Each structure stands twice: as structure tokens, then as C-alpha cells.
Image (cartoon, rainbow, N blue to C red):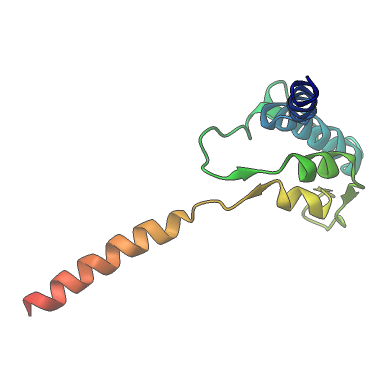
Length: 123
């Protein structure tokens, strides 16, 4: 019985974490809120803009703890310039939400290298 309660508690705790889908929604909302705040109302998201960043099957590992820290952390605004308004700057934790992502350039580079080696053997 104790084992069943322990397993149930672990499953419940895991289920309470911030899902990737929920993070995408909340990040989009937070980014849009900050965009309007940073630009002092000059820029704002339109309906559906917050959903444009959703990517499925990216092949990365999702870190729910970093996602929570990202959303709960202190967001800032970049310095406005003559040509660009101030823009949202998310906390550093946002950069740790997705990890171990496949490097798309390495795939094309590897195939290019193998093509080069085939060409050099023919000479």
C-alpha cells in the first residue's frame, strides 16, 4: 500500500509541472504583454501572434523547471534606439527551457562532407 501511495504521489507531482504546451501559451502571452509595455504602447501583438512560436516535434528536451523560472523571472526591456523601439528581454532561464536540440546545420554539413569525400575519391 505504501508503494502504491508513493508511486501515485510521484505521478501526481509530475502531472502538476508546467507542460510544454502550457508554457508556449503563457510565454506568448507574457511576451506580448511585455512588448506593449516595453514599446510604451507603440507595438502590440495581434490576435493569434502569441501562438506563432509554437513548434511541434522540435526534437529538443523540455525543462519544466526552467520554463517556470522563465515565466516567473524578471523580464526587462532593451534600450530603445532611434530606429528600434524597446523590446522584451526574457530572463536567462528562458534559454534553458529547450535543451539538447538537434543541430540542423550539422546534418546538411555531414551530408556535404560525404559528398566531398566521394568527389575526391573519383579524382
